[in-house]
Length: 310
Image (cartoon, rainbow, N blue to C red; front, side, top):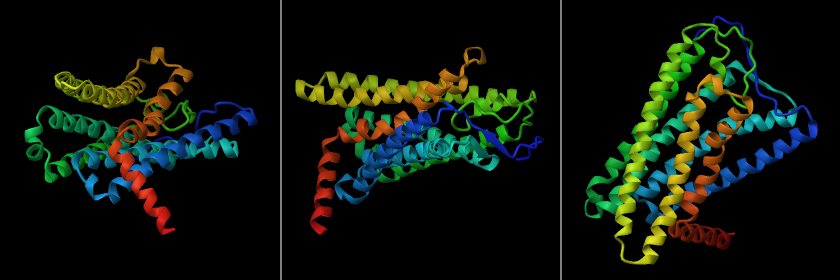
């Protein structure tokens, strides 16, 4: 991954030069990060420890929590360290690592969300075929495909981005290393190839989103045929938040990477990056699992067992 520039470090976005506001940002990010760690960590531990949760839906939830932890742990800790120590620096190698790990987490999560929508579609619309279509081997293959997709996508974009010569300084207008901001530093027309790659990736993401929406349309049609009003309310109260968070994650991520340069601004870029890289990992534990009675019962049982042993 050669680079003709002599850049050894990048300077990340400074929200403010006021020390008190820097510390306020540190505590805000710390609270968000701890909430994400606690929520996703509890989900992973509960699903791993409770035998009756070893089903396809919870297997995918466990993988989703792993991706969420990876996503938020790639960006937020470095930002907190910069706020705490009043610095903006990130090494060249650290920037490469951030780009790769973040792209890996969000692309694998997008693929996994598509798989999860298919799982819910089969469970609700084709319950008699669920055991056949969503067997243990099929679930492992689907999860492995999501991991492989994230690895290949991240490797391709990271190698292509950091092979470009960077001659417009080393200031990244974002609180973490993000491909659109790094491309602004390139002085080579080769960056157009990366833009085409991002556009192609955007089409793939759009395809995933359309598949997810169509799956939920079929799910909602099936739910409306449920005779019990309580059953319909329970299904809608679970599915609608899922769809809302998926829509937020995919739409803001696609906008951040594919928006025209003419409408780019530091404040807009910052809001979009927070919405796709920080908010979903924090909300997913609440939306996907803490509203689930089985998860809450298993978590209560796990906590009770821990207290009794202590």
